[in-house]
Image (cartoon, rainbow, N blue to C red; front, side):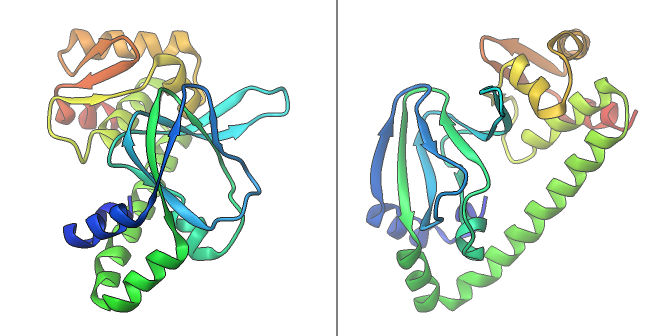
Amino acid sequence: MLFSALPGDLQRALEAEASPRSYSAGQIIQQRGERADGFWLIIQGSVAVGQYLADGDFRAVAVLGPGDSWGELAMFAGRPRVVDAVARSVCSLRHVRKEAFEKLLSDHPTAMRPLLGALSSQLQEILDVTAGIRSGSAKARVAGLLATLASRLQLPASIELSQQELGELLGLSRMTVNSALREYEAAGAIRRGYGRIDVIDRTELEVAALG
């Protein structure tokens, strides 16, 4: 997440200036085609980012939690939003205006270096995940995505993600995902909970992803 790459004092300055927003579970936060006049920071709760399909179903591509941000890339590019965002729970967010962000970078040009590093890292992760989704067995793809999601978290890492959502992210059936998770739980790599998956042994998952 690009926001997290900023120095702490700059993060706090932007957060203090940003307008607070609250959403209830299931409420739409943003829709495709909207003007990207800023980006979002999650203070509390969980948000699913993806797209509504023609039949009305929502297909998630990412599930975000406290401390995560989204929308920076569309804001930088000056292009309309390409994803919908829906609150998975009661959410407390802050909307950082494009003008405030640009002024901060103008006043602190050295902040661009960590932002570029974070952008490169994010792109590499996307390429890694995409490569994993396109190749390998279903079990390896599940392991690879869980390892990636837990890569920035301290173990045990709690990932707020249901089996259904994990299947949607990977294009796999709930039954296939359940089978893989059951095997990894038996091996001690993860622990399943209601609406979440706790990663216990990331190395085990990384090894499984290679298979």
